[in-house]
Length: 102
Length: 213
Image (cartoon, rainbow over all chains, first blue to last red; front, side, top):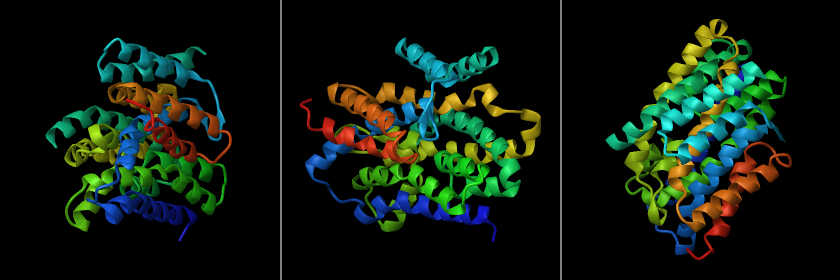
């Protein structure tokens, strides 16, 4: 089997295991109040981390490129209550324009 | 579930576009069939783009697998958070667990640390075919499309996460968790392998949970 297929199968198994560990091991059980307080805030923390890593990350370094302009555009129009689809398509257009001009 | 599907439709469209760019980039490195199979059985942008980058750069199989696993390590935390909201048999909990993707999981998160599992399933429903079909289109039409980044497709994901963040972040503690999470992820990106900075952002959630609301 080629290296590529080994990678695909290993990542399919690993991703499934990571997704299922919580639901299978502690599914349906009630957690202590302290854990619930953390879980409630987890989406905010992880979403913000995903935003900055996908906007400024380039492998293991940080970089400022056209993506930042696109994402900044999305943030500004969302703050002005634009619909999500406008913000997202606008982000791609602004990024593409900045690359074409830059 | 219907509300989730409606909410997921624009995400399905964006995921389609991102998968096209994955197919375009993967085709010369992995061939025609492998990227499509990977989208069907791995269904994870982070792991697929991350492992592709390492394979393209001539890295080892072990390095490609390790990067993919680290990039998806956040699923462990997300699954643990979701677990108390899943009642029922192991098989049904597993089926719900498989539908976790970042956007659906975050949008299904609600007050009191609870999740709406059917909303999450609904939101993932348009995204799975979007991901697989986009990969097929990217692999087959790759040469005609040129460089996908020229279209700004790499800004789609972060822009979507910003949109979700705007809905999610209400109140001091969530603002603190988001600000802290972003800061931790930025600070750790140069220091540790990709994927871990996102997982480490969970520390900000733990710290913010000790604040008064």
